[in-house]
Amino acid sequence: MSSESSLYSHRWLPLLLVAPLMSLIVLFFYVPVFQAFYWSFFLEQPFGGGSQFVGLQNFERVLSDPEFWMSGWRTIVFMMTASSLAVVVPLMLAVAADRKIRMSLPARNILVWPKGVAGASIGVVFAFIFNPFVGIMAPLNAMFPGRWNPGIDGTDAFITLVAAHVWSGIPFNFVILLAGLRSIPHTMYQAAAMDGAGPWRRIFDVQLPLILPQLFLTFVLEFTESITSVFALIDTITEGGPGGSTTLLVYKIFVDGFSGYDLSGASTQTALLMIFVLLLAACQFVFVGRRINYER
View (cartoon, rainbow, N blue to C red):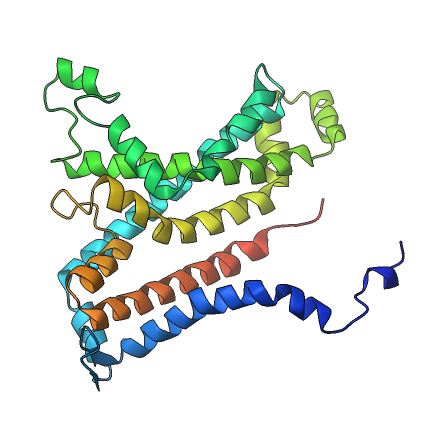
């Protein structure tokens, strides 16, 4: 098929095809982001009570708030731990599935199913699974009373959030990493085997270097996604507790805006979170992305 036959006959047809999707992106992403940045420079009254321009006073107030820095620190800790595990666990599963071990074919389908489950539903299920009285930790509490209790122990609640996020992130990352592994030529494995490389050596010297583009993609998406997607898990599992130990920045914005009616403060925190996400993604591409070789 020639390249000319793949071109659209009408110059406006491609724009018309992407117009519905672009409209949704503008309406539900760019407009709220612009509104958040706009409100961050104003003192907004709730329920349409008017606004007053205050310049950078909202940023000064937010940046001097210890709770903002505590929630920001929790967000970074969650991002590093949950995102790393959400890539490492699917990577191990993808390597196992790629080796065609027993039950690997059914596992490829089963591991994709959680992608169709909503975040709020995942939170409800994991709240029941990690319940200290009827969940999987109940036998531990029977032997050592009070050893596991996410309702009053912040560390236990944080672990529950991390486990739920890792489980929800397995399907997408598993598909990406498995596709990268399946695209490696089989001659690479044969050459490594002839050189005397064992299974573990082939993983670290052949497979991982050749799927670095896929690993980089999953890490970039996970690091940015974990900052915002955890909201549904927090709202259904811990509601920010106990004692604010699981109040990440995205949930603090929700509480300040919809419970405290601090629209200006919530918008300012949203603007700061947006800037942090953009800087994080830029640093990943500048310091990591340029070192990856996309040619085999």
